[in-house]
Length: 218
Image 1 (cartoon, rainbow, N blue to C red):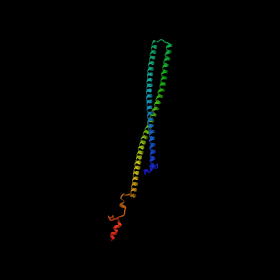
Image 2: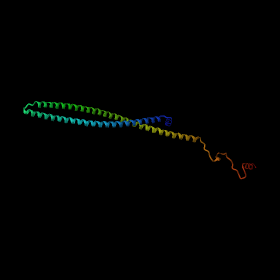
Image 3: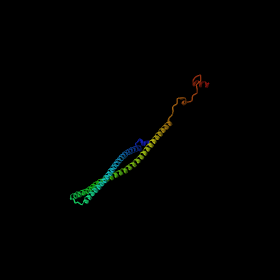
Image 4: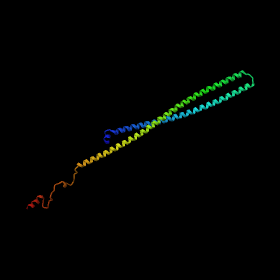
């Protein structure tokens, strides 16, 4: 049966088409997994770099706050020395008030800018981490699909081998039947013609068969 299916384009052709299709799909999904892996690695590197930048910003913020506290403390100590003299100086008081407000406004503005920058980094990092997580989920699904495709390909290859073996067995059986049938109707020729000639008395030394018959009559 497999012989005729293969000869006239039956299930063997279908198996070959399915096998070719599955192999192509497996190749595409393997390439897709490679791209997903490279994208995930790139995202991970970017996330780690941005986290380092974020830590650097936090460190600068702490340094700025420390510097502000030190400057504020120095300004306060200087003003206390001014008060200890008990000598009113309107110009000094004006400069002190200006410096105090400037220092206060500056630290507030710097904190605001740093917070915006940190929020931007945090939002960007969270977005990239979400993308990386989605890529891992997609990669897992692709990997499961690859395993299923590999199993399908293995089953199709096994089915193809079975069809080829069945076809070979059929051809071998068909040849044996032809040989057996031809031998049953074949009449072999023989080189010994005496086997198919009628029985004949041997000739004697006096002559042929007619001479011997005349002697018997006398």
